[in-house]
Image 1 (cartoon, rainbow, N blue to C red):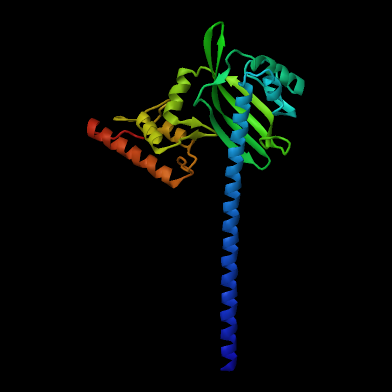
Image 2: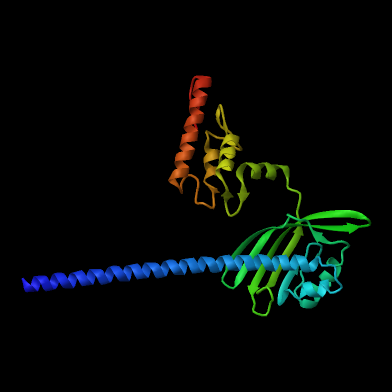
Amino acid sequence: VVLLRHLRCHCHHALKYTTMRAVVTFLLLAVAAVASAAETNDDVRSVDSATRRWMDTVTSGGEDAAEATAALYASDAVLWGTVSEEIRASPASVQQYFDYYASLDSLSVVEGSYQPSIRVFGDVAISSGTYTFRYAEGGVERLVPQRFTFVYRRSADSAAGWEIVDHHSSQMPAQPDGLAETMAAAGQLRGGWVMPNSDLIRQTYRHYMTAGGWTGPKVVAGTAPRQAYRHYTTASGWTGPGSCSWGTRMLNTLSARASDRATRLYGKKRPL
């Protein structure tokens, strides 16, 4: 009896110790996750501030605007400027570019046109997006929508905490009608078809579904939509047939609805 009591007491203390250690471990992991998320958010904000600093500097209109802008780039930075036909990979050539660009008459960034997408990977950060520059030429106001990619490297020597190591900026091209229609229906392409929200998904389904069944390019017994939908993904994790049961069910449901609609209208089912 004494031995049993001793074992029971020992087991109780061991269980209590194990439970406490598990709780402490969980709390430590939770705190670390929160701290990591907060650090990432701080980095995103600082990268955004670095890009805004660049825009403020290049449009300052001061006599030292070119020199001050070039100083935001690392000594080994690479610049492919909006109006440059060559890549510039030295501090002197970078400043030469801004000797021209920063001196454009009444140069400014159109308010609200700066739309960045920022990702941070440790000591490297990438900011891609759009901005529109405004300047005067021959008394005429020019608006130039542009797309950009900044690559930053963390730097203690930079006031913003980041220095530019790569920068590409180019005028926004005119999008072909065929591509515009495709993107309007399918969303933004990023390593596959990206469907950013449910409304856009429904719009795409409506685009492909008619009373006669599925329509779209190269329709052969409904295979084209299925092939296309295998490429549909979203940032929230939705993917098309073959990689997500929810997506498969959605496609099957809509296919069945289209088939039922065709039955009511034509008196027979069409193969999907």
